[in-house]
Length: 126
Image 1: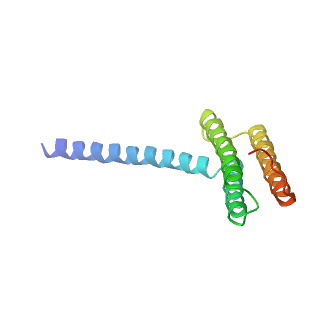
Image 2 (image 1 turned 90 degrees about the horizontal axis):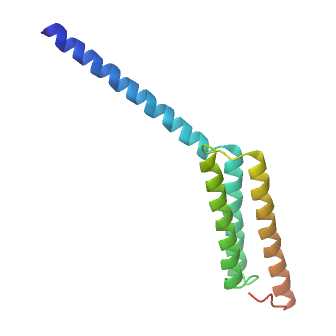
Image 3 (image 1 turned 180 degrees about the vertical axis):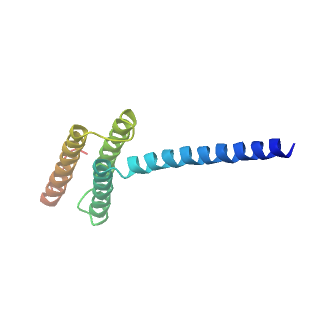
Protein backbone atom coordinates (compact mmCIF):
# COMPACT_ATOMS: atom_id res chain seq x y z
CA UNK A 1 0.00 0.00 0.00
CA UNK A 2 2.83 2.40 0.85
CA UNK A 3 4.46 1.64 -2.49
CA UNK A 4 1.22 2.40 -4.39
CA UNK A 5 0.73 5.72 -2.56
CA UNK A 6 4.31 6.74 -3.30
CA UNK A 7 3.83 5.79 -6.96
CA UNK A 8 0.63 7.87 -7.21
CA UNK A 9 2.37 10.83 -5.53
CA UNK A 10 5.32 10.58 -7.91
CA UNK A 11 3.01 10.43 -10.91
CA UNK A 12 1.07 13.47 -9.66
CA UNK A 13 4.28 15.47 -9.19
CA UNK A 14 5.52 14.57 -12.67
CA UNK A 15 2.15 15.48 -14.19
CA UNK A 16 2.23 18.81 -12.35
CA UNK A 17 5.73 19.56 -13.62
CA UNK A 18 4.66 18.71 -17.16
CA UNK A 19 1.72 21.12 -16.92
CA UNK A 20 3.98 23.88 -15.59
CA UNK A 21 6.45 23.25 -18.40
CA UNK A 22 3.72 23.52 -21.04
CA UNK A 23 2.31 26.71 -19.47
CA UNK A 24 5.79 28.22 -19.41
CA UNK A 25 6.25 27.47 -23.10
CA UNK A 26 2.93 29.13 -23.97
CA UNK A 27 3.81 32.16 -21.84
CA UNK A 28 7.10 32.56 -23.69
CA UNK A 29 5.33 32.38 -27.05
CA UNK A 30 2.80 35.07 -26.13
CA UNK A 31 5.52 37.33 -24.71
CA UNK A 32 7.57 36.86 -27.88
CA UNK A 33 4.61 37.75 -30.05
CA UNK A 34 3.90 40.96 -28.11
CA UNK A 35 7.54 42.00 -28.12
CA UNK A 36 8.36 40.98 -31.69
CA UNK A 37 10.44 43.86 -33.13
CA UNK A 38 8.33 44.48 -36.24
CA UNK A 39 5.12 44.40 -34.27
CA UNK A 40 6.51 46.55 -31.46
CA UNK A 41 7.65 49.19 -33.96
CA UNK A 42 4.22 49.42 -35.59
CA UNK A 43 2.45 49.61 -32.21
CA UNK A 44 4.83 52.27 -30.88
CA UNK A 45 4.42 54.37 -34.01
CA UNK A 46 0.63 54.22 -33.81
CA UNK A 47 0.72 55.34 -30.18
CA UNK A 48 3.13 58.16 -31.06
CA UNK A 49 0.93 59.37 -33.92
CA UNK A 50 -2.13 59.45 -31.65
CA UNK A 51 -0.16 61.49 -29.11
CA UNK A 52 0.90 63.96 -31.82
CA UNK A 53 -2.72 64.23 -32.99
CA UNK A 54 -3.85 64.98 -29.42
CA UNK A 55 -1.11 67.61 -29.02
CA UNK A 56 -2.09 69.27 -32.31
CA UNK A 57 -5.77 69.35 -31.30
CA UNK A 58 -4.87 70.76 -27.89
CA UNK A 59 -2.73 73.57 -29.33
CA UNK A 60 -5.30 74.36 -32.02
CA UNK A 61 -3.31 73.20 -35.05
CA UNK A 62 -6.05 70.64 -35.79
CA UNK A 63 -9.77 70.82 -35.20
CA UNK A 64 -11.37 68.21 -32.95
CA UNK A 65 -13.06 66.67 -35.99
CA UNK A 66 -9.75 66.38 -37.83
CA UNK A 67 -8.08 64.84 -34.78
CA UNK A 68 -10.94 62.37 -34.39
CA UNK A 69 -10.72 61.36 -38.06
CA UNK A 70 -6.95 60.86 -37.88
CA UNK A 71 -7.30 58.78 -34.71
CA UNK A 72 -9.98 56.71 -36.42
CA UNK A 73 -7.58 55.98 -39.28
CA UNK A 74 -4.77 55.12 -36.82
CA UNK A 75 -7.13 52.75 -35.00
CA UNK A 76 -7.99 51.03 -38.29
CA UNK A 77 -4.27 50.53 -38.96
CA UNK A 78 -3.85 49.04 -35.47
CA UNK A 79 -6.78 46.67 -36.09
CA UNK A 80 -5.19 45.57 -39.35
CA UNK A 81 -1.90 44.95 -37.51
CA UNK A 82 -3.70 42.79 -34.95
CA UNK A 83 -5.45 40.82 -37.69
CA UNK A 84 -2.17 40.28 -39.55
CA UNK A 85 -0.49 39.10 -36.35
CA UNK A 86 -3.37 36.79 -35.47
CA UNK A 87 -3.20 35.20 -38.91
CA UNK A 88 0.53 34.49 -38.52
CA UNK A 89 0.89 33.21 -34.97
CA UNK A 90 1.46 36.61 -33.33
CA UNK A 91 3.96 37.96 -35.85
CA UNK A 92 3.81 40.28 -38.81
CA UNK A 93 5.90 39.81 -41.92
CA UNK A 94 8.24 42.44 -43.32
CA UNK A 95 5.81 43.02 -46.18
CA UNK A 96 2.95 43.56 -43.72
CA UNK A 97 5.13 45.95 -41.72
CA UNK A 98 5.97 47.93 -44.88
CA UNK A 99 2.28 48.12 -45.79
CA UNK A 100 1.31 49.29 -42.30
CA UNK A 101 4.09 51.90 -42.37
CA UNK A 102 2.90 53.16 -45.77
CA UNK A 103 -0.60 53.55 -44.36
CA UNK A 104 0.75 55.36 -41.29
CA UNK A 105 2.82 57.61 -43.58
CA UNK A 106 -0.36 58.55 -45.45
CA UNK A 107 -2.15 59.40 -42.19
CA UNK A 108 0.86 61.43 -41.08
CA UNK A 109 0.90 63.30 -44.40
CA UNK A 110 -2.82 64.02 -44.00
CA UNK A 111 -2.20 65.40 -40.50
CA UNK A 112 0.56 67.67 -41.82
CA UNK A 113 -1.68 68.85 -44.68
CA UNK A 114 -4.51 69.58 -42.24
CA UNK A 115 -2.15 71.54 -39.96
CA UNK A 116 -0.84 73.57 -42.93
CA UNK A 117 -4.30 74.29 -44.31
CA UNK A 118 -5.54 75.33 -40.86
CA UNK A 119 -2.56 77.65 -40.47
CA UNK A 120 -3.33 79.19 -43.87
CA UNK A 121 -7.01 79.53 -42.98
CA UNK A 122 -8.20 77.07 -45.61
CA UNK A 123 -10.87 74.54 -44.64
CA UNK A 124 -10.48 70.94 -45.78
CA UNK A 125 -14.16 70.09 -45.52
CA UNK A 126 -13.78 68.00 -42.36
